[in-house]
Length: 353
Ligand code: ADP
Image 1: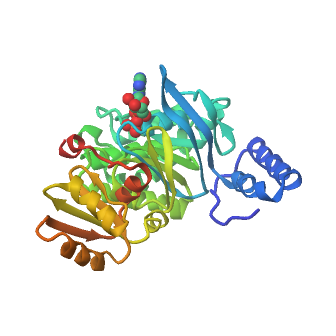
Image 2 (image 1 turned 30 degrees about the horizontal axis):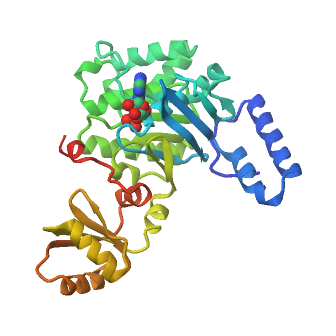
Image 3 (image 1 turned 180 degrees about the vertical axis):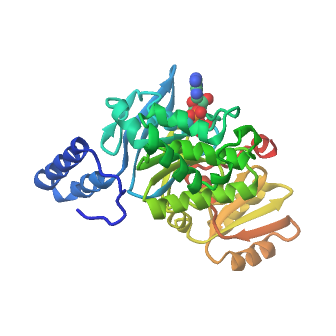
């Protein structure tokens, strides 16, 4: 199988062998209808099948399955409590799932964590750099952890600081850096051993809009120029829009999977939101009169409809004086979330926080 967006770092012999074996088994022994899933898997860099995790009796992840393709910028979008951090901890080998399998570059996160750690770079939400050390010192310590020394390490540090735009600050303490620079140093740390896969947990937390934009641009450069496969968790719609593909999580399950455009197109039309004095009564009468699926969400009537601008004229005429305001808009990823779950992404309290 060829794919010109494969990561530049080759799979270890062992991992490629396992993939090849899987592929041969898929090609030779399966019915045509089941081939696509099996043929896709060998080409996946990250592959999750029915991953489950529990805290006590409660499922935090309940049968999560998806594949991440080579050199893809893949987003894991979900509201607070949807299971992003739990899944991130499993992929970064900090936790073993109670069910299912997760593999990265052919290595099983539960069975082969030590080999896997060499293949992945991880940037956690919490700060991991030592701000009392200089940028170069931080990277030197990281390099030693990966068995890098001497000239090789020195060259690697220089290359990484160049890449994240910190070359001229190499010998300054990280405590003198802005939030955005500190995050870039975290990235340099995660990338120092040249991993083919980079995992980032809400990497823009606490950054101003300019630093957020820079970081996302940098992730796109990593994908395009270094062919690194990037998985990033986020609860921000505008960040999710920048991903090649997304898995949207809700209550420990994948509720949507696809490119941002594919997901928005499934809504098929416009999203109409109405403010009314009695939204429940208006929604009921709209359902009856127009056979539409009008719902009340957080005090507003909401529905999806093709040619929304034409439809609202009919609604205003049908219910004179009852509607205080109307908006018609193209679907967003939040609309996809509502469409799939029946509730909003944010609660009122979260939105105000
Ligand atoms: P997210 O990162 O999307 O906010 P989490 O993975 O942190 O989601 O949480 C998923 C669910 O698991 C939530 O219901 C959360 O309350 C619960 N949870 C997370 N960590 C723990 C823990 N250490 N002990 C018990 N429950 C937890």
